[in-house]
Image (cartoon, rainbow, N blue to C red; front, side, top):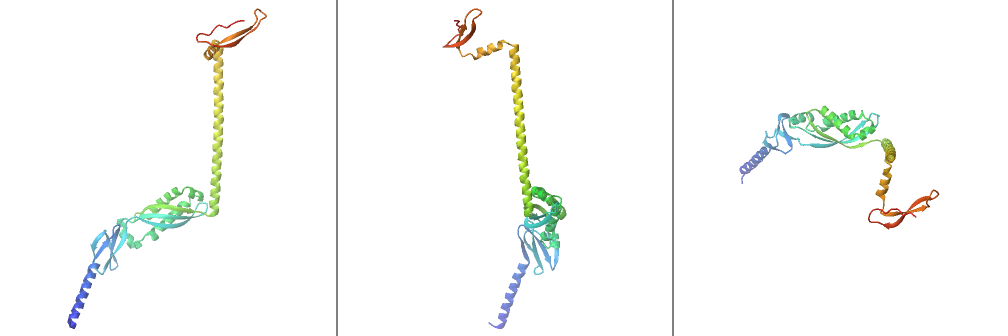
Length: 279
């Protein structure tokens, strides 16, 4: 093989490699959950590339992928309460970039707006909210603090991003402040228990008074019924009679005789009661 053939072979190989590289440089693939930004010699295209396969100008253009799915980032924050207590908060931020904002996000924040846009706004919003509450209220009302901070962050960020949620994973106070809050909560629980015991005692006393008044009223009604109806006692005796005939023991006849005494004979009867036996 002469030198001319070798040169032609090398030239053909170089041409094939150049064509393969050119073909590779002229195509791109945007993965699901991302949008592509085409940059040509430093100039950013005004329109984003949808997910999937596409072509571009080889060697002078490249595609930058920007995520549009929900992202999660951790964020530590430090703030102060209304009583000037330092509070350390560990946050988890859920956010996403809408399609309409991917180009502007890339131009203004190099495609990652968290550190330069989201984090400062969240810290600022959290400081504004906690500054209106005492440290104890920040701990007790963490859900209200989270809601207020989320609304304030959304107002500060605007429509360029969507802040899905803010999760307060942990709120840390100083050791002395935590001990003071715990002691106060224990005292409040003991006071609530004492109030409950006092209310229970008062209810039991009121119930006893009402029961006593009811029993007294019942006795009064029975007394009035007996007074107005003398035969009521005899009726009650008949109703409670056990079916045994009584026996009368007399102290004697005449004016000097003793009082008659009724004693049961112990003989059960099946019919009407027998007449008393006098001796």
